[in-house]
Amino acid sequence: MEQLIYTLLAYINNSLNKDINYYIAKSLLEHIHKIESFSLDSVAEACNVAPSTINRFCKRIGFKNFSNLRHSVSIPMEVSLNEKTESELNTKAFFNKLNENIEIIENIPLSDIDRIVNQIHQSRRIVILGFEKNQIQAMELQKKLFLLGKLCECDTNLFKQIDALSDLSEEDMIITISIQGNILSNHFPITEKLKTAKGKKLLITFSSELHKLDIFHEILQCGKIDNSSVSSYTLLRLFDVLIHRYQRFSEFN
Image (cartoon, rainbow, N blue to C red; front, side, top):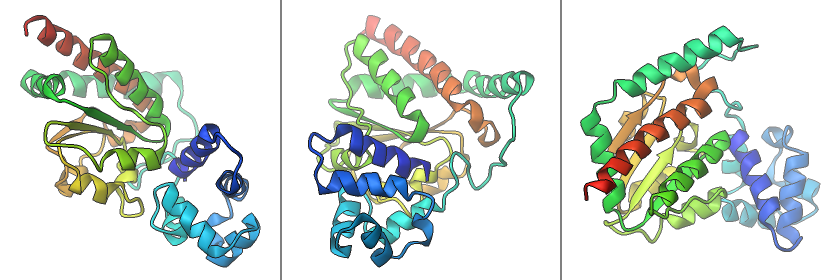
């Protein structure tokens, strides 16, 4: 559900004109907690448009059709299938989780970090895919690399992210940030796009299950799935490590 909310909000925020698609996005947000029970006809009625218009809008924002969008809502907000919800994260628990993740980052072999840094340096074009609340961290990585002379692409709209994958070459690179892996489920078309996209593919995640997808050339597991509540801080630490090594690499090349 969370990714759908971000996608709809991004569509509204980036709409230059308040056209029919703007109002469909707005109506879907207003009925977000009912979408799972809606049929195509009922959501069309709620949005005051034809069913075919709803399906066209769904394709526009990255879904195959309304049924595909509706299935995406069943994924719990910020909760992986393997993760238990927490009623409250106190200060001690916060630091314990963060420290566990930082220890995982510190144990990543330096050779792995340097191989990824070299790939970033060599790539002609880099697309950074950030989902849900980690879109902000994706933009932070984009900014840090830009300050070192590497301009990357990082769109906040899911459907634009998907479009960006269509015209990449073998000289390019995709950096995908998916902490729990929900966005890589079959409910989202991003998985098929990633499979067929050219270029080197790096996944940054907390999930140990995503190795089975056989999509990515490199996978950086930088935290535990049970520690997803501190993912934002964990990513910033990982990016500091990557940027430090990238800076050193640039100085000697």
